[in-house]
Image (cartoon, rainbow, N blue to C red; front, top):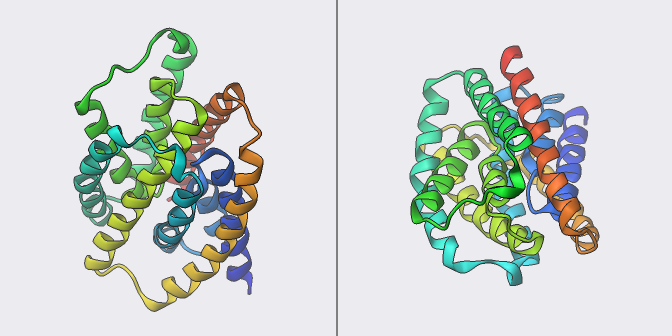
Length: 244
């Protein structure tokens, strides 16, 4: 019951936030799950739960998807997920968490001191492929798929609806590919699927509530939320990395 509570509660909170913003579910759920599961089981559980929950999120925001960019994000996601799974099996998770946290910090420093509002990432297939690959890698290695996509939409200055819709649809494919690659690598067991079912229920409820709230936030709040999300992600990954 102790484990069940933390899995359900963690994913309810994560689902509520992702329903509002379109991202951040796994980052918020993961530290709560580690209170009842070891680090590896918590990461794998998050990856499994993300599959059905991303289906719900993609459906909620389906009318806001920017399809011209989606195909390139999806194409880059496939090798990223495969590479992340291989890396997770070869390199300690703590090292990966610290490395990604430092990269986020560099981005945040540039945003604070480099004039975020005066520079926009140009339209480029290469940028889309790199973002898709980085997101797939982060998802299958440390369960923070939203970090590269969060950076991407901030640099593109997308409006909140376009950002949420496109991220939700991208997360759907990246989650399904991650589940497939991890399953084929033999890291899943029946216990993880049982625990993940509980997390999925919590996430479904949280996302449905968060979606209702998210329709009422403005663009400035969305940008601030994204920056706060990235800051929290960097702090969480760093401290989890040094404790691993």
